Structure formats: C-alpha cells, structure tokens
Image 1 (tube, one colour):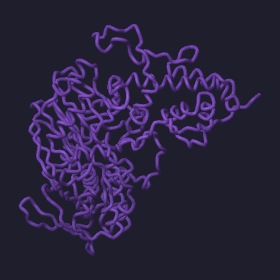
Image 2: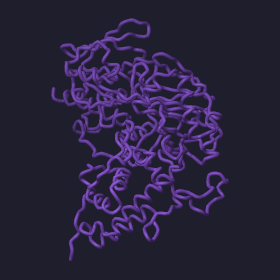
Image 3: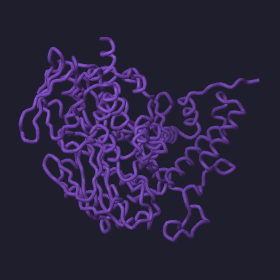
Image 4: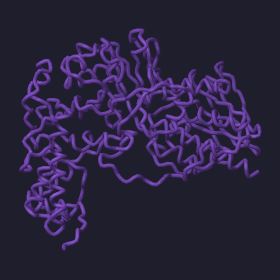
Length: 555
C-alpha cells in the first residue's frame, strides 16, 4: 500500500502552477499568505503579480503573514507570587513615569517592602492609557484641543490603547483584582467595509463578500489541482479525498468543486430593502478586482494574528478605568508635574533632579531607579548612562500614529447594520472604528482614523487639528457618503506631538536597555515582546522588579 507522503507548500503550489498557470498560482499563493521565489515554482512571468505593498506597522500585527514567534528577548521573569516577601527591606526606588509600567512596578514593590516614589511629568497618571470625554483637552507641542462631545458618559474616545486580547492574562488579572468591569471589543465585523481606490471603481465592499469570495476562489483553485491529479505523487488517494472535502467546506464550493457564490457573502437587496431580501445569494466579486484591491495582503488576515483573535475586551466606560484603578493603589507614591531634568548614578545608588510645578529644582536620591520614560523623551534628558545604553536610547525608533474621533448619529448601525468592528481603506486614515458599546442609542463616538503606518502618520502630523478633521471627513466620505453630513465635534491626537510621549510605541529591538545601568533599571512597553500593548508594559515592569529583587536577595 502506498504510504502517505508529506508535501511542502512550495511543491503544492508548484503543482497548482502546472495546472492553472503560473500567474494564477502566484496570485493564489499571495492571497493565502505564502511566498516563494519565482524560479522555485516554475513560474516565468512575475510581472503579472500585483506589487506587494508592505503593511503598516501596528502594535498588533507587524506583517500580514504571521511570521514565527521570535524567541523572548529575555528569559521569562518570575511573577509577583514568586518574589520573597519583605525583600525590599525599606530600600528606596525612584520610578520615572506613572504609566502602566511605572504604576505596576510601584504596586508590586510596595508589597515587597520597598519605599517607592513615582515622578510624573504631567498632572495625570496613566501615560498613553487615557480616555477623552466632554471638556477634556489634548495638548500637543503646537496646539491644544478641547473635546466638545456632549456631556454623556457613553460618549468617549480612547486615543491610546483601546482593546485587550483575551490571553493578556496579567492585565486581565489586575482588572479582576481591581474590580474593573469589562465588555466585548468587536475587532472584526463582516458587515464592515473594505475600500481601495485601486479596485471596484473605488467603491467600498462588504467584508463578508471579500472574505467569502476569496476563500471560494482559493478553494476552487486548489480543488482543481487535486482533481486533475497534479499532486498524484505527493498525496494518497485518501488524502486527496479529504482535501477536496475540506476545500468544499472552507470555500463553500458546489458538489463539483466550483465556486459560484455563497450565502456567506449575503443576499441580493439585503443592504437596501430593510432586511427583507433573504433568498438570492449575491453574485461573487470578480477575482481580478479582489487581487487588485490588495485586501488579501493585510485586511483579510488581520484577525488571524494572535493579538487580534477574538475575544478582545475593553473596560466599560473607557480605557482609563485601568489607569485610574492603578492610580488609586499607588496614589501616595506619585508626585505630579515633576519634570525630570537629570538622571545620575552615585556611589550608593541614583540621584534624580526634577523641576516641580513652580519651576524649582528638587533632588531625590534613592537606592534604585526604574526609568519608564519613552526613549524619544529620555534622549533629551541630562544623564550619565553608559555609552551602550545612551546609544540605544538615542537611536530607538517609535511609531507615529494619529487617531481622529467624532460624535455622530449612529448611522452605521441604523442604516448599515454595523455594530462595532473596523472598516479599512488604503487612504491615509487607514481604519474607521465603530463603537463597541451603547448599541441602539442615538449618538456614538466613531474613530474616523487610526493612522499607524509611517507615511500615513506623517501625513497627518504635519496638519493642524482642523486640517486633520477636514482630511479625515473627505477620506471617510469614500466609505460612507453621508459621513460628512453626520459627524460633528471632532478631535484628534498625533502621538509624536504629545509632550512627554513623542511617539506611539517603540518599534526598535531592545538590547542594552534590558539590562541595568548601575542601579538604573528600564521598563516600558518598548522593552517587551508585546510592543504597544499594556501587557507588554506590565511584563517590562516585572522584568525590572525581578532584577532588583534578585540583586537584593543576593546581598
């Protein structure tokens, strides 16, 4: 009996190329996230493949193809339950910054017997973890905006972190510990839109149509290869049968393995007949248009990546519920409006100089320092870091995201059946987020842009706040023609222009900053494997605390 043999994806697609043609094979390969050299597949005309545009860098998904998870930058650190109680022995620690990393470090070190002081440059705790409501202000290096939303607790905007993956167990553990109520964050919504100016005559397409038809075409292509025995030397008869059945299920193929459309994509008239159309499946989109749209490079696989998979969560009433809960735990440790001007090592520890709100210099000496100040800000502070540490600080890169939010009648729910989720466009606004709570209310806050790609972020950073709103409305009108007539009370934030942040999240690889510089330790999401996530900030705090605890227990 013939033994089952293994088959590489390269050879599998090479066989498809022999049956269906190299151009189709290459496009199918790209559509399902596979890449290979042209010569390795017997292809002869790579020019037929649409150019691949690198995806924007988001803290969630650095590439569209789910690369292998890199090894941890540092060994996993012990967690609070593993640290010996009383190990602090009243030693002093100055923590620079009251973001999630700084407050986590203080909260855990207080329990160990350390005496912590947090120096916070602004008048509030939380760093990038904040929520904007009526009357709040967003200060940038060259502007100040006041939020004009109606005074309604359901109308709010999270300009920084906005979602929590279900496997970020450290952050979720603190939410339970601090009694923070959570609700579902809808990340992917098949009723939302995909839009490309390069395909479908610039008309937005329902996500469910693009996804259903893409799967159908891919499945038909692979099924054709199997049925024509192109893989006869690679698959057993049973394997071939199983693959055919799998493809029928995956792609909603007909009994003869062809794709002619599917009710997964919806029904004729469903969007404009008050929901009465439920009989005739909508015709499939043209495959060439799907390929030209580039949706398959990033959008359709977005929710497959580990940090975007359902279920995602959010605090009820705004992300700052987390920051405020931490703040309550360490309020006695925080000195606000303390702008650090010097970080210096001493024979016995660390000396920090800061300016208080009156402009007076204040000196704090302590046994240790945990510095969570973003590298974009830290590089301009007088310090005697080692050359290796200073060099890494000076050259650490950050993303430059911008977000725009508007108050609006919930036309997306009332007229388009969109309840939460994200629409995509290849314009600079990149994404439109629909609110994930308050369903059925008249008013909501829609995030009209999340520009996490470098070029898109730069394009908005050079604009005035009003110009950002105008541009956001113009581009969003391409997805929702009524958008400009509905939205009001806009507000925006460009993180590279926010004082004491000057960036969204770290993008450089951390090396020297993972190690102490004398008695100075470093923390922050930029020093974790989960850059841009609050879970990463917590992990980095644990790493710094663990370094100090290990050092003290060896004394």
